[in-house]
Length: 150
Length: 146
Image 1 (cartoon, chains in turn blue, yellow):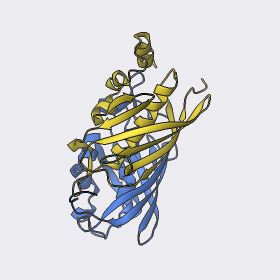
Image 2 (cartoon, chains in turn yellow, red):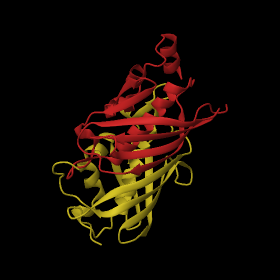
Image 3 (tube, chains in turn yellow, cyan):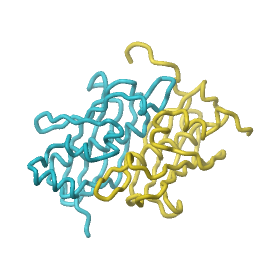
Image 4 (tube, chains in turn yellow, blue):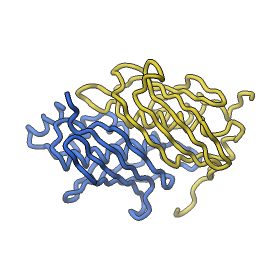
């Protein structure tokens, strides 16, 4: 499938304010896998004594990687959005201080309405994860501005 | 954790606002905390850098998840005399509604506290507490074996 702006993960990361603020960068993506990463940064630290990155930053990274692969590539972003239904994260250990953290997500099943995704966060190799994640996403949710009360 | 010990030594062991001041990621999000009796409420004022969907607009699921996790940890620190920050073992998030461009509030309850592991539930809401935007339950390691 040709690379179009809708499918450009790097551009998407640069345009989403929270992704940009956390410092997410595109590593690679294809039809089945998406890998993004964050660089170690002082504002991401969760434990000031050890300098270890906060679990919340890993959560954001995994959520973003999983969401990017959940969306079918032929579904234009302006027509349909995706919404995280649920996400479970297991933390295997702290992210080593000073190192980039990668998240690699794989969509292993997509139905008409729901995408099922697994993702791992790692530093050196996805075989040695610091966190793993299972998530489900609703596809084709509303993507028009809210008006009035929910 | 040295920060916790320092705050305790200063008689501010339960001053969670002072603790948040020392956690860079909490400051990055802009998280605040208020004590209401034996419960605490976390408050996340809306800010542009939290946005995950610019069209709606809605707060990023990662920021929502981070707030839920911090709400659990803060309630745990408030309820127990942990010597260090509890470590998340696993956490399961339910995203119930879009978190919109407004202030988000959070509450947690420690459902079981064992010697080494605690089970904690948390919920976030915006306009009304009976319309939660997200919930989570997680397991936290209190005192890892050295």
